Length: 116
Image (cartoon, rainbow, N blue to C red):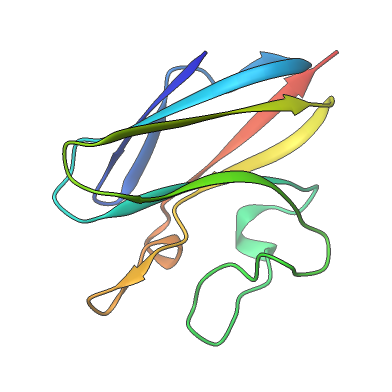
């Protein structure tokens, strides 16, 4: 299991690598804003990921595969998902756009690697 702490403007995972296979991502919001945690498989650097007109990652954009996500993780809440992951590069991101804040644009992302 990968435990992730979400706050303004950070994603703090308990690890930045995992072995291929089923992985549970447990996201806890320790901040005050509502956040989300989206997992993308991509060879793109976070700064190269395509954005939509709102300044969020275009979840259907070229070079990205949306794996899974938890949305609307309010302050103090904990949500999780389990995904079966293949080896490769991934990006964890908060893709929320609320109250004039574009969380991804505030560098709320982390690179994550899955090994064989």
